[in-house]
Length: 339
Ligand code: NAD
Ligand code: TDX
Image 1 (cartoon, helix red, strand yellow):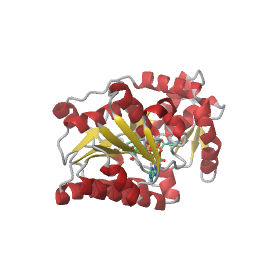
Image 2: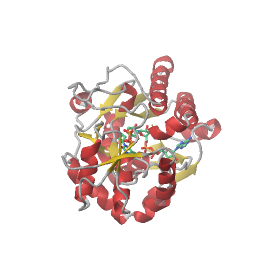
Image 3: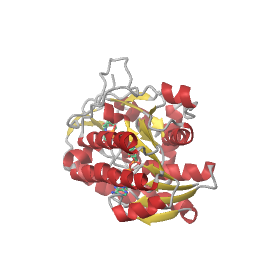
Image 4: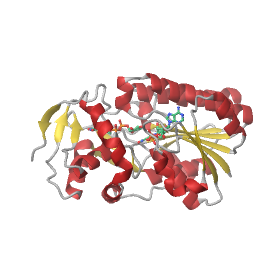
């Protein structure tokens, strides 16, 4: 099968390329990636001779049209993906996530190519900490940040193109991913690389916010399940029952690195910070038979810490610039302590 993977030099896209080549050696993969600050060819170096890499922008209609004409499947990962950046400057988010997705949709419509759209649970807004409810495919959209509202917009565009133009599309909305090749701006790699460089991890607000963690390989296996067995026009939620509050995650990282679990700081909160995400993935499990393989978050985190420990040459070039951005807005408000 010929496939076009957008955003394949980013975190989840690169892992998708590695996973696909490991499990489907016949796949013919073209990666289209603009190599923004979040993308690097280093993430594809181990498979560079097995893929075609195109350095380009998903908003470039001529380029997108040419690449889509030559493929059987598009898996669309490319996005501006970081909430904090979207608060500082929303425009790249509107451009890539909304205009870029529309550019792809027009091309798959023209060439009648199967399309899978990667999205996030953040389109549903947030849940109360003490609410037993979880997001399902019928939860109303209620995004909070510029990032999540542009992702919600892109999902709605896919639904409209499926209904009005009959494009062969599926959508998945996944919870927070962790694993190798994740940019150090994101929570888990930021704290791991802080600890590895002797800097105290930093928790926004009180650290009580809850995220529903899934290993990136489980996400990507679910994407393949939906591509191969999903019903066209449908949405599937992907999650692995991995709810944990941010403080617990930081304490676990410190402990797994052999440090005092109280050795962290609290910093100013993210404006509009979503309290809790939680996915009910019953539909994907019962209708399509997917199950996650990383059932033990602690074990997955241990493997991820090992990866960052042994791949400093991959993350080092990002670290100082990332921390310089955070230093512009972040203020320490307190220190961790024993309870
Ligand atoms: P990432 O920021 O690590 O990677 C994004 C990639 O897209 C980068 O390689 C970047 O260079 C590329 N890109 C950005 N703008 C582009 C453009 N205009 N044209 C071509 N390429 C461009 O993001 P990620 O964490 O790997 O997320 C991938 C997708 O998964 C996104 O759609 C995101 O919304 C979604 N998602 C992420 C998570 C998560 O926890 N990270 C969870 C659910 C869904
Ligand atoms: O230094 C930090 N300290 C901290 O407490 C950072 C970077 C984050 N946080 C908190 C904010 C969140 O509650 O950790 C949690 C996770 O933060 P992020 O890694 O920024 O992820 P989040 O905002 O939850 O969004 C992620 O999951 C959904 C991805 O970045 C999105 O692309 C995806 O759609």
